Amino acid sequence: QVQLVESGGGLVQPGGSLRLSCTASEYILSSNPMGWYRQAPGKERELVARIRSGRDPDYGSAVMGRFTVSRDNAKKTVYLEMNSLKPEDTAVYYCNTREDGVNYWGKGTLVTVSS
Image (tube, rainbow, N blue to C red):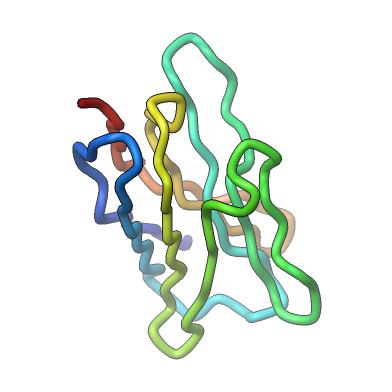
């Protein structure tokens, strides 16, 4: 069973930047997606970004042009570079991967954007 561990969340001011990391407990095929979802209080979980080999990364419309997802397969790690952060980006960010039809989730890391 794949375990995912996120890091890098915290408090940042509007307009600031953060970088999230997520490391898997085992190698994830590059053809399998790895990425990020988020859930704000009172809202449904939504796609932030995901990446897999052979395809362009997918981004949620709310973060397009501000966030960048990348992946280091040798390190079993996916990253999320977040720039120009807004208060509405405040949420718990969850790492995700899918293998053999099964979704795996990390426990989440809280990102708070506030002055």
